[in-house]
Every structure is written in C-alpha cells, then in structure tokens.
Length: 74
Image (cartoon, rainbow, N blue to C red):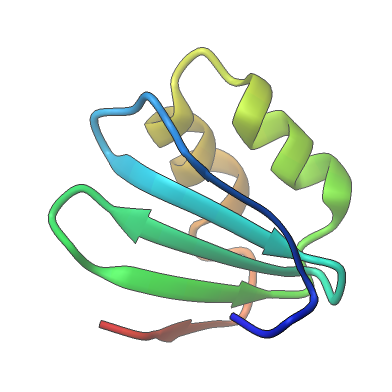
C-alpha cells in the first residue's frame, strides 16, 4: 500500500484479518487464510459499510467481491 494509506486495522471476522484503505479509493484485504487482495475504485461508503457490518464476510461477498477490479497480492 502506498503512503496514501489512511486506515489499516485488524478486524473481528472469520473471513478477514486486516483491512486497509487509502485516499486513492484502494481497499486492501488480508484474509484469514493468508491471501491478500487489492480492490480499486472502492467508494468510502462501501468501506464504512464493511467496518459497520455485523458479518464482514457476508458484507464482502455481497458488496465487494466481483464488484470491483482487483489484484491478488499474495
């Protein structure tokens, strides 16, 4: 993640371990099994929804997965 990172935090989730979001609308997710993905063009409201979601995994599957261009990092 670039120097533009404004938020990186560990999350309580059975699917996700870390969430990072930068001012250039890039969302980086680290999954519990170790995979890391970067999603591009993610609006702040979607990220806020992820943090507020009771189930972060369900929110990811409905609101992020297959909706934004992404790159697998690891």
